[in-house]
Image (cartoon, rainbow, N blue to C red):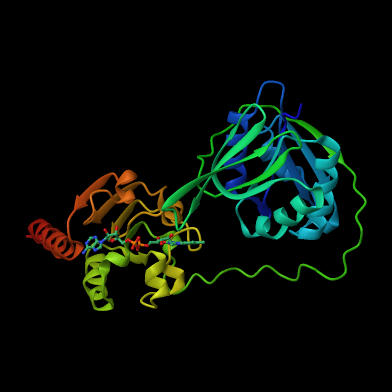
Length: 327
Ligand SMILES: Cc1cc2nc3c(=O)[nH]c(=O)nc-3n(C[C@H](O)[C@H](O)[C@H](O)COP(=O)(O)OP(=O)(O)OC[C@H]3O[C@@H](n4cnc5c(N)ncnc54)[C@H](O)[C@@H]3O)c2cc1C
């Protein structure tokens, strides 16, 4: 019976990406007795990665080759197709990232395996795997299942699980693999996303606005408030879609991930795609008219009221305190 869980180690510019540690933590918690968690390292030189993964998996399978220096979906697929066929894991886990969108569906078709993309949870049943996925922008959760006897592939939304340090001591196995040459696709260069004039990923204080701000004209009140507390202004996706702030200010799964000391969310509902980008802020304050808004689920402090009333009141209080201090 299949029991092992494979986790593809995602790396970019020599660094293992956070999603890998999140998946390995989840895999350790889920693997059944008699099964092993495997970290699958595909790289030009795997030593640096192996060092960081030793405590995270029972076994590390390392395939090293010049062709694996950068992500290349066809070369990745050749290796993964071969080791999944040979070793028959119960599950192969990927992060729901651009790499995965490129490779996982095609791998599933090649191996004739069931696949569920973008999951936020999974369970291993007696003869089935169950997953939970969000649809309609996170408003509805759906449950899928597939028979586990032939194994399957799951991709998980980044930020869903918290990475914890493992305490394993992995066995390391290096595999030599003969690649078929790919000529119609090659890595050219890695292009870093522009940080913009303000880099919200480096900010210690962020005032983030959502659709609750209602009109573009209200931006000025927010910018004044942010300036008064030394914060930068960021936003949810609808604000970028409306063209009120540039894309570099968007927080969330298709925007930036931020970890400020203070995150003030104004008129943001707290959909999953937004929370992924800011849930690790030290202190979160949310202002929302709706007491049931999901943002209150992760906020340290919540104010249920109209943000256009609260923001000027907060600013006034802060100014009074500053004046009192300097008097
Ligand atoms: C593939 C994909 C990727 C996505 N990526 C991102 C992403 O990176 N970042 C992101 O943010 N979203 C992203 N989204 C969109 C996401 O699903 C939500 O639609 C979005 O986050 C909602 O933004 P919002 O909270 O500003 O708006 P809404 O959900 O419309 O919420 C507005 C909130 O404002 C409150 N409100 C209204 N008026 C007031 C007032 N006067 N005072 C106080 N509160 C008020 C309301 O109660 C409500 O809770 C993505 C969606 C998809 C499908």
